[in-house]
Length: 164
Image (cartoon, rainbow, N blue to C red; front, side, top):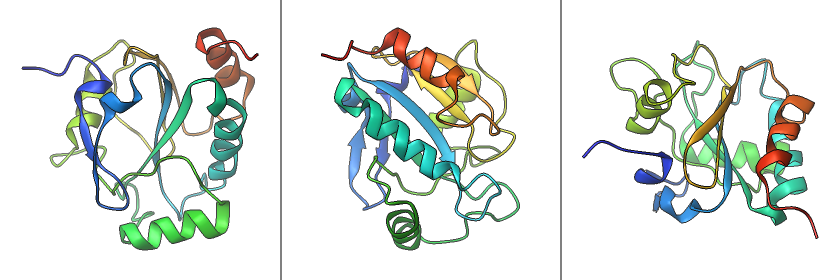
């Protein structure tokens, strides 16, 4: 059966555990392909800030390390986790390193890049996909879009549970 939304996939966490993305049903997601040696690596700070600001309203950032662009994510999962924890104090869910393009593209990214109106190849690190609570991709932002930009926060505010 073809995947019908993001919740159809099961991924390996950065700690090696299997996690069905169906666990995030009912939550707004920002799915990001990340790298630790990229000009955009500083966006980890903004991703964590965004997560901290909205996590109480049904929002999650999901980080997917990928080494598809000029070897900018050479580390092991353990090294990546340590880098993210120490340098950026990342607390949002991080997943095992995957491929986001090419012959070995991970099925989740195959879906993200071909299964919606926001399809198209990943061109660099820190591409962002906004996913609504039902698992449907509702927006996409390029690498240069800062996680705390009004473009992203306005889209989030439109869909998130109102703050109490």
